[in-house]
Image (cartoon, rainbow, N blue to C red; front, top):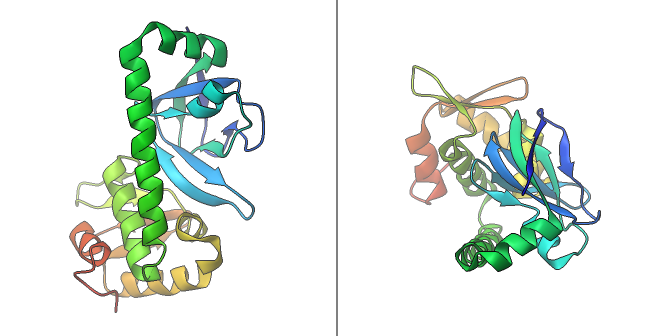
Length: 203
């Protein structure tokens, strides 16, 4: 019922506020879901994930923008055909609503986590990105993530860039991460998980 489309890193698939007349099934690569002004990254989706499906079902304006994080291949599903497919396949409809409920739970957890210290929020974000498959694994066991400190700040709250930079400096000094141009490399994922879980302190 659909056809394949591709976008390179940084290019948009859909924009907040526009008509939701199609949904996407991500086949390869990752996308970032961005909301608001200034923009905040609220989710990263990868292969097997749907994006834009609720706007297509509800025929409402998009509640978020979706940009390619890296090179992305997706299946473009026109809204009318997508909705008819769900009507014709009740198990798919059930799976769709189950996935939506999980995303609602994720959003609730993020609200709770927003009260955590910046260091813990940052460690959670980096751990989740490293586990998502979005990064490149090196022979030394590190994970290279193509994102900036501004991207990280946008994931945990755009007004926290200065605090994020401070935490990044501390994590670099401790040998937990390394940074480059538009890149953050996770050197010690176990330590990041410990900080994320509140078992270790950043400094």
